[in-house]
Image (cartoon, rainbow, N blue to C red; front, side):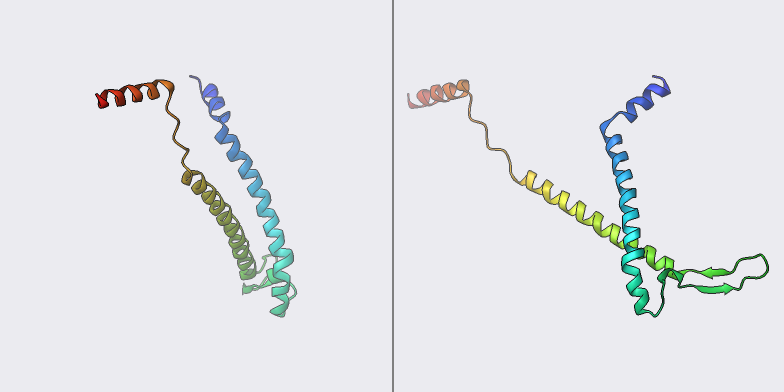
Amino acid sequence: MSIMKEFKAFAMRGNVIDMAVGIVIGAAFGKIVSSFVADVIMPPIGLLLGKVSFADLAVTLKQASGTAAAVTLNYGKFIQTLVDFTIVAFAIFMVVKGMNTLKKKEAAAPPPPAAPTKEEALLTEIRDILKQK
């Protein structure tokens, strides 16, 4: 089998397409969460800390000199990224928890036993008659 045929067989499987859709939706969800954190959550926190922009929190390690930019430790952006991660991780946790709950409900309800076929019923009657004699 050629490489192109193998790749086509791989790419056309349902799991690969589902995974691709999940990645695209996940990336969009990540952007929404980043905007939510940067534009809704962090400004009030920054206001409580006496700063206008939380992302501007930084420690200058070396001042700018000439054409070289200043070297800074941007801990505000790091904390903002941690909040992003926490929200995304919690959302994923809730989705997985919901899926596990649905799987448990499906597994907990076993299907009712099938009714015996006509042949089985007839054989059971014959067995019972033979036992009586």
